[in-house]
Length: 278
Length: 287
Ligand SMILES: Nc1ncnc2c1ncn2[C@@H]1O[C@H](COP(=O)(O)OP(=O)(O)OP(=O)(O)O)[C@@H](O)[C@H]1O
Ligand SMILES: [Mg+2]
Image (cartoon, rainbow over all chains, first blue to last red):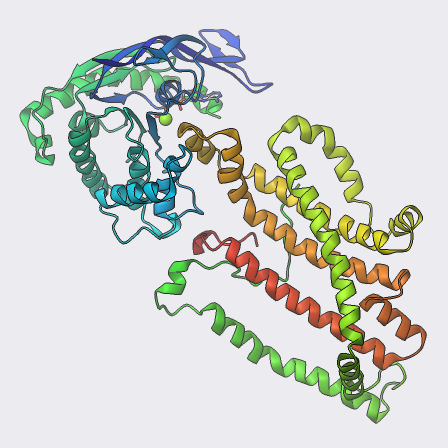
């Protein structure tokens, strides 16, 4: 069953006054980021998005999340056009985005709180989700007292506590060390296999992309569109050792090949991009 | 506009809970206070001794500088007679009313100015102009318009505090992490909840810092106003005793003011620490 449908989504930004961008000799005060993205994602699917830095992956997630309006084209969830944040979509960010004045428990409760869940019930739920992520005993810690891996666990617990149908994750493990990253990948898969929510996961790590995904979506350099979709036909549940298998290696080669040209293009575009990246 | 900071703030004005809970070699807030006192005590004692001895020995004129013991005796008399409490009460009441009026004005206004750039553009010029007009210069205006009664004194304390609060509220509101706003929006936070649960809490440390400065200037302004035009209050007590050449009484008033200032500062710092207790030790306070 089709859950997310992105069709012909284009997005361009107006630059700040005085800034311009020159593409193919044409100078403009607008920057095109998404250039007709088409993508349909089934219910319960785990999709990973890879693409060069600055290609527009985060912007695409924002469009699906209802945080940014597409310049043209639409994103739909269950056939309904997304115009504002959907109650059953959750978003996890690279920088955790926890409220520093709230404890771990209160952070998880937040999502339930703004939905009007009664206090006692949301406390119970929040506790359950913290425990699910191995954070028993850390309920009363403030984010500044938790390690990066723990903070991201809290953020994921917060996202999942609302029982989302769509889980958007923007490089959630990129700021973590390699071991923590491995552990969190496995944890995420373990939990996802139980709840089977639809996940769109952005990453720069090809291994991570393949290990997690049902399908890896390779984006082109900016302005981005879908370059190629690689279906990952590896058995589940997956073990971290699968990364040493021959099949995995073959996928690694394929994704890298697809990505390589785009990264090259993005690099040639680099002076340009670095000037306009905020 | 920049965050207003204050030199009186102890260097480490925020403490993480972790530091309090796990025993470590780092000095605790308490032991730090104790060491400040024990180290600082000799200088204070020396000062008190000098104050006592100098007039007695005739080094300075005892009419202008009565010995400390005489000042303390007068102070004690005023405490016992209840006279001092009356003066303190009226001064604090004036300062408190003016300050609270400043809070209820400045915080909502600061939110609007910090959040809506059009609103800020429209009001910034006026605010900057008013802010740079001394409340003392305006006292005659307040007296002309509001009379010499309570209203003019409350007006000056209001005026003294309102800009600290306003500017720190604006700074606080503007410094909210855009990622937190984005995360909150993605969870379906309504505009009202965004104010209440995201922007307000992240602005609190800055607002509290502004409040701390505002309380102090409120108090000092009311003292000044009482010196110029009042029949009661600590400021009046000091000024009147000075006119009457009752210098022991005057110093008793000044000493009272100092003690109130010290206590208030202690309370405010403690309040600020409470309001920012969630901060890690790594990113402590704006100083
Ligand atoms: N609000 C904005 N205004 C102007 N340009 C923007 C805005 N948001 C994003 N961009 C531009 O859009 C392009 C794509 O940004 P985006 O953050 O989606 O890239 P990304 O693929 O997520 O990159 P990374 O992998 O580095 O996170 C960038 O060139 C960026 O400068
Ligand atoms: Mg990104």
